[in-house]
Length: 428
Ligand SMILES: *Cc1c(COP(=O)(O)O)cnc(C)c1O
Image (tube, helix red, strand yellow):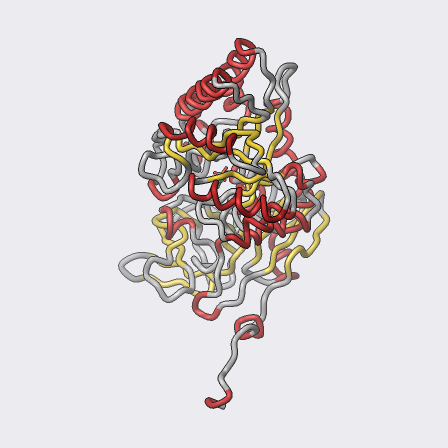
């Protein structure tokens, strides 16, 4: 979320007064700013559009799979990186063209592989075993799916271990030393069209050196394959660019332009030396949707105990990042923006778990029941990781744009908690 919106007492987001929004839609509620979303996507497009390189941006649907947001990104020309049959369905429902969808996953079911082949999307193959399975399915379906080999490039980003995916021990991808053999095997197999290689090294990466390392390794692989007579149509370097959450982080957080300056020289040099012209694909998730949304919650109660607790109505049921990744997110009191931060407090959710902490030891204004606490930069891995834990229906989502508001997901009701459950007859 961009700074400098403190013209008045109330937080204004996407041209809309957040206090009015909370009154109209209730809390908790996720709010996404359409302009910010478009701007974030366009900054990738412009950073990677050069005379020599043709780049496609495949948005990572798992970061936020709301259809309205996918629709906006589709209108900007986004493709999609999907990780399940469900995400494939979301991407197609939002109108993302199938020739710009890559089906990822380290544990795809046969059914999912069939869906991918049937839908004519590209498949990122995660193991030699999966390669054989996919070939058999393709022969049976009389199709020839395009595939990429998912490479584990064995680089170590300095991020939380739960979000590093390119480490040697990570469950994702084919080990680097086996990738050439895997590509050769793919070439031999019937009904498999090897067109790319793919890696994704982790998430929330703020130090770009690992991207440099991974790009170097991937481009060397392109060369090795070229020398063996395998020419690729695309190189997919994944997502993972981090965003600034705290004020200090915001100052150092790299932009897509910074990322382009790390990737493009290596990419283009290798293309030139080999005289080939593969497409570059990137799969950002967080850096596109993260800063575009806030989660607005209401204070249910305050308590002075060993700590000052501010208990809000959104917990890890709706926003699990602080509990799961120790993620830091800025919080503001949306109806008291001009009040002095004077109390050290900890914002906690309503879930029956002591780990349900949203913001630990923060300076906030004096807060009372009924005040609104907005969690900033909450658009990525927020709603998409929500649950109904503790019998809490999921909240609504709204889209704001230049002062206009649209509901993009109704809040669930208690009916949704029991919708698919059955009590056996003998218990009735
Ligand atoms: C999660 C994921 C992404 C997106 O990562 P961000 O950190 O949100 O940019 C991209 N590609 C793959 C394969 C992923 O698993």
